[in-house]
Image (cartoon, rainbow, N blue to C red):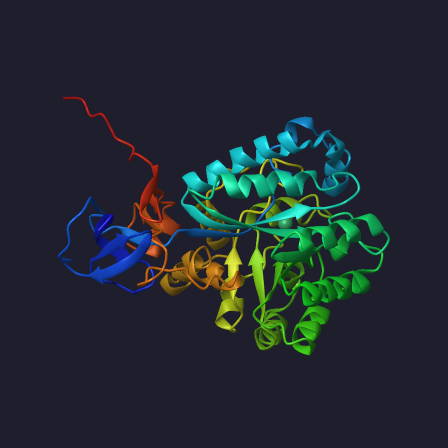
Length: 409
Ligand SMILES: [Zn+2]
């Protein structure tokens, strides 16, 4: 064996006995208690193990620009406009350097799979796309990155964005996204993205339904089109802040519709909390969709990072476990099963959202192993327990030392 991880507590099994994982040629080739095998060993000591955390929604290209963006003194954040105003400064090298710093922080927090959104428009042309393609290749030793190309600054009145997205899809982008909120014709925007997805046979991941009231929601159109074109399981939407402003019975009705249509939901707690309720000066509404309720109604959901150090979210450390903790805290999650599901929304559920067929601790899958300093998924989320060791295809990529107290002798 190239590596044997001993005494691993696998996150997907409730109250599991420790098991040994054997990795050979980059793949998991043995799974058994007290595995008889020879090779280098890592003792997980009964700690929680998963196949890596899965970031379904992040913006590497516009991360770490808060220092070059004009501050916004009022309650209206004008985030899209403030980013658009500095996009001309995005050279390929600049995007690469910032995105690499963010990607390394994600890797250090145990992320092994990622979908990053990338903006395409006349302001940035293909520079961000090309930088992220290079980054994807350079960091394949630690993480699988897939690109979701989308028009942040409207599509229907912006033919250059449309041309660039077509170009990126021809060059192999695997997912197409959308931002209908910023388009004068939201319905045509959504329709065009579905048309592109069908033409190029790619998955869809749209920014959808940010806002402070359950009006003008695009989710109904998305569900109708997912059903009409039989794209269930290949369509995800991010944010869904408006859903949190609906009475619970209506949220359940919406969830059943999404579950039937096969449309998944990603919440972005850091951004949603920062951006929503800006019409209020006090007693500010949170605008965070209750993904546990959605999961209970059959929707597949994930929890992700979205923005880091930019006008949409001027903070962030790229810890997905911190995002799950924030989600659980804000949505007042207390039941153990729900806390556990919050961890699944960083791992198995996220992998399912991205249609990753080879994710998980199972024979034949890649030897990607993350050892977390916890004995259960619930504890990892509740206590913000971080990964201690990460292996990618059986090779160590991350080591994080435990904090030590130095007691007086
Ligand atoms: Zn986003």
